[in-house]
Length: 231
Ligand SMILES: C[S@@+](CC[C@H](N)C(=O)[O-])C[C@H]1O[C@@H](n2cnc3c(N)ncnc32)[C@H](O)[C@@H]1O
Image 1 (cartoon, protein in one colour):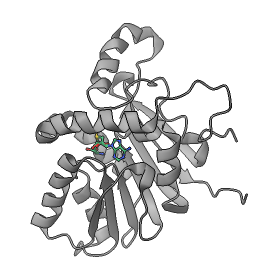
Image 2 (cartoon, rainbow, N blue to C red; image 1 turned 180 degrees about the vertical axis):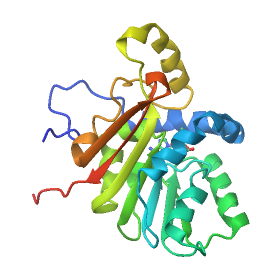
Image 3 (cartoon, rainbow, N blue to C red; image 1 turned 90 degrees about the horizontal axis):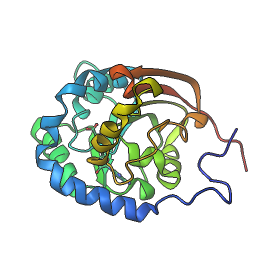
Image 4 (cartoon, helix red, strand yellow; image 1 turned 135 degrees about the vertical axis):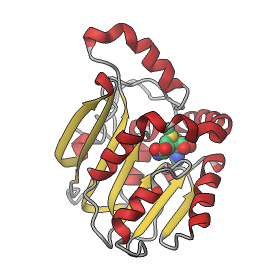
């Protein structure tokens, strides 16, 4: 298996994580207030991505970079059972401006089984390993080996993983990719690497399923976290 989380010597140096994070934090300081109003067109993608987790009543799930918490109710419905109180939903985000909205959502609804953390993905430490991971529009985290390593370490081997995000159109629509880049630029600290943004996480998953969405400028992928070989 290629070691996608430890780039080989001589591999071009990525933008340092801290620079990327500071750019992301600055963008979401600006975008947080209006963020929810931009998410309507991708609501169906969110629902399909969450369905791909195949969650069961009583399971635990982590909403990676949960932002304003738009996925929390759907996740809670699936793990919570009829009363909604079973299972556990965790979420985290490094943006205080995004997370305050997620916290308000959870508090207003009185969700006792939703726990949110303000932290960088690179420093995440959950109380216990989860059964499933949702990566919904989390490009910066998918492109950071440190962030990805830390997030994947929070799930048990065999955990379901579902990913949705933006990618470049296929080559025959390449002229539209400048627009895709600028669209992504508005939301991410490291906006490039849109050819195959999943290529660091895919080698860590079994049962890989992939579907292009939005005429080729989006994707939904899923799999099951492979157990790491002992060192
Ligand atoms: C496009 S938003 C997606 C939010 C949410 N997942 C959703 O589907 O609505 C990307 C989120 O990633 C968060 N983020 C980016 N880099 C991060 C990092 N290194 N650690 C934690 N959160 C990060 C941003 O603050 C932002 O809330």
